[in-house]
Amino acid sequence: MILKVVNAILILFAVYMGIKQGWAMLTGKPEMLDMFRKWNVNETGLLVYGGITLLSALLILYPKTFLWGNFLMAAAILLLISLHLQDRNLKGVGIEIPFFLLNLVIIYLQHPLAKIH
Image 1 (tube, rainbow, N blue to C red):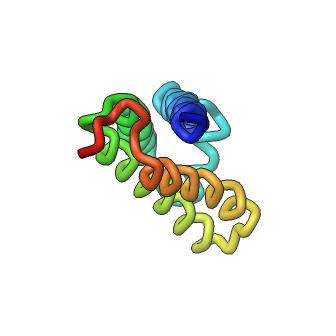
Image 2 (spheres, helix red, strand yellow; image 1 turned 60 degrees about the vertical axis):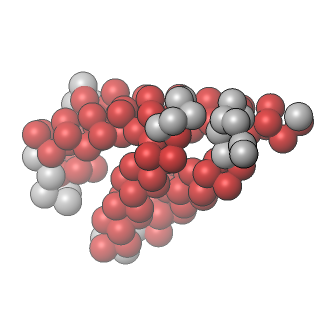
């Protein structure tokens, strides 16, 4: 029971961060524009990436789409890690790795409302 509560808290945190970052990308926050411009991603690419991030966060909430949402979010984070590595930005990598690992832990613990057979 305690594990389900902890997992629910982790899920809510991951969803909150996904919505926060996705919204920042969709609304074109200057820091997001600057970060993605150095990787030659234009505003349209940032909108698409932000939309995928928002969608993945929302998919995590529902047991039937839980795995897909985590997969999309982990893939998006892995892309950011790769781009940071290309720039040799280890600080950026260090910031992203805990969020990537969070998605893996959440997948392992499964959705707290899912019925396990």
